[in-house]
Image 1 (cartoon, rainbow, N blue to C red):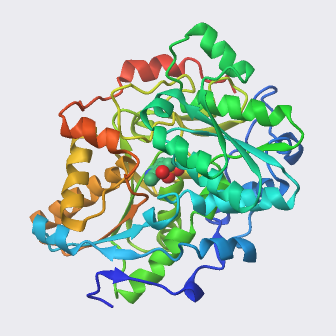
Image 2 (spheres, helix red, strand yellow; image 1 turned 60 degrees about the horizontal axis):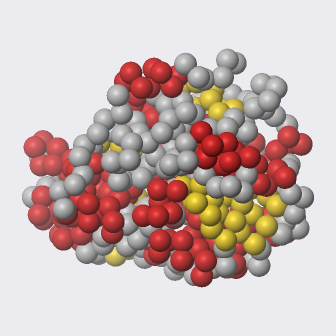
Image 3 (cartoon, rainbow, N blue to C red; image 1 turned 90 degrees about the vertical axis):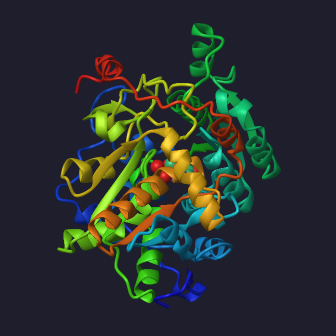
Length: 451
Ligand SMILES: *Cc1c(COP(=O)(O)O)cnc(C)c1O
């Protein structure tokens, strides 16, 4: 298949286990701390929020964890996803490099997020949960979890960051089609929301604040648990079906990547494509692994590696991660997503150990890259995914300079068909580049927990 455009796997070739990177880390992750006491959390502290099986996965040292039969059955609705070779883009760029991309936009929600929403809903259903709460920024996670809850017959309540709630009404409709109830955050439904509204009735909201609302809601009700779409260890592990499939597909194409690229918000799609290759790197393979983030939310490249709260109201556990501070508020002008203040502890540790690299990019060149991709390859990338496209193009152009025929693999984490507002703004010339100022980072860091 070394000259094919699409490299496909059959359902029988789908991974039967998730890859847990924890036993392969250079050192164990630092403990997660309780937001109230500052002491390490145990399973009992997390039990009001998460299904027990997910809590176990969060700290598991098993290298492979079997994917339950029922979850595999749901995965088969769209998995295995295709690996494509971007031949037309290569030609346009005039590069000797080969550009491969794994396309996760084929899921019903249009992104990689159902890879974890489905098992999270499944384990909750098994343990008797009737209702799940969550937050959503751009709306992809809310759609994925709403879908998963509908498949396993549970209620779903989504706190949607207010600015997106009004900018992306069709995402809200989609969640409602799947039976979820959706409110704009900050909302009057929780203490955290009411306090934020009192402080600023015009508040646009933020992911950190929406998390506070969803966590508070779940903690208040016996029948309800909370679900997070990124950052946590078990979430990243569920996404490793992406990289395991990609590895098999690259083998079929008779190629091995020299560079693996993924965009990073909380780190889940990046981890999904990258961790199975990180394993190879730790075993001695010569491979570069690059995380791409926006200049407007430069968590890895400008943040610090420090314990911080996962949310604004300081209800979520404290973890050691790269962070811009839990008080971070993204600039309104930024259209490209990837707005979370922190980074998954797993990705943070790998970055701190220089096993992976990070690069920050400006939004206008990101949309330039997205449009170039759409006009050659047809797929209209999610603005988030376009960050990976941008760096894949940069690397392919570097190959043109050096004459090297490298294999570049990136994760196309989703399509952009619900994000036409961002494309409208770009096409109308209304997007500006915005780099989060270093002074604001310093200011936010003053509020880090003292542990
Ligand atoms: C949510 C999302 C991201 C960012 O989240 P990660 O956890 O960093 O992957 C990236 N791409 C798409 C399409 C998304 O929906």
